[in-house]
Image 1 (cartoon, one colour):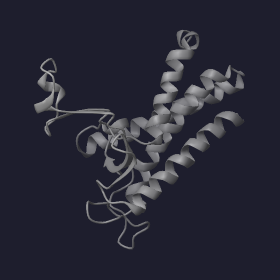
Image 2 (cartoon, one colour):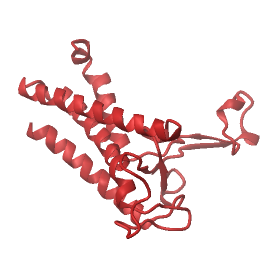
Image 3 (tube, rainbow, N blue to C red):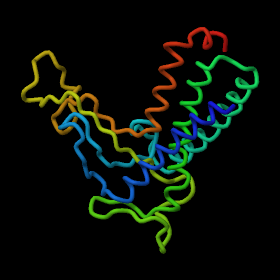
Length: 205
């Protein structure tokens, strides 16, 4: 059980350290270019799932948070059983990454509203504000920061074969548009690992 715990701890530590740094030093929408316009630290928050997708309304947020907790509990139990059976490390690695990513975003939803003041386009959040946090338990926002607009095409300059629905309201087609975090990346890596390298394991489920 040591290796999956190490994976989960490492992902959570990196995820939360970066989120705390972003939350306490940047305003919403603030950007730090890393590699020109192709890799950017862009601070944003969302109420929902990985890569900024979300359910509408407070009930949707609560339902998603509760579902995450149930899913993480089930994955944790299953991971424990896998290690007890001394399963191959491949499936254990994939599930550990997914579990770590899910836990990382659960921490945001569960506790960030309690321990941080609200971030805005003009003010940086504070930790443990005297007036209390900006939201109740399980209603916090997930912090995202990685933005990789590798391809950006303005609609007016786009080739004729590109359909209009590919362009957003700002008139641009951007790949890759979603802003994400380390937890989202861990989930993606874990799922991709299982689908690409652990098909035999998945068929046996």
